[in-house]
Amino acid sequence: MGVSSFFKKLFGSAKETANEIVQQTETAIEEAKAEAAPYLKKAEVFAEETIHKAKEAATPILEKADDYSVKAKEVANKYAYKAGVVLGNVVETVKEKANSFANDSDPENVEKPKEPKNRIEEDTE
Image (cartoon, rainbow, N blue to C red; front, side, top):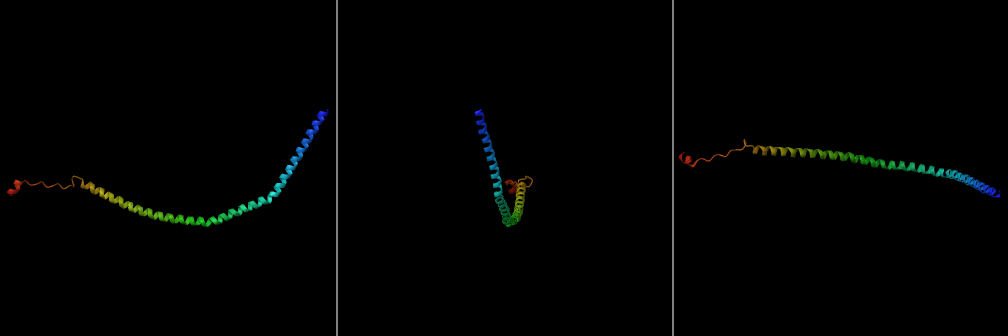
């Protein structure tokens, strides 16, 4: 029976040691949480302040970008209108030229050359 009591003591003391380690670990975790709480609060406040400052700094930039966007749209619309007018004029000119060429090549509109008079007829006249 000496062997079995040896193992009981050995494993019993290991169990007690493991329980003590678990308790010490739990205590250390609770202490770490308590010590970290102020730092976590400071980090949270810092993050909120940084976000607020970033929003404040970005607001004028976003407003300027919006102004530039409006101006860019106005300029683009003006040039698009002018381009449309010029393109319309080009299309009309092309249509006119095409119609002119079509009319010039129409056999009904072509002037027929005068037939030369017969020389003999000219002399008798």
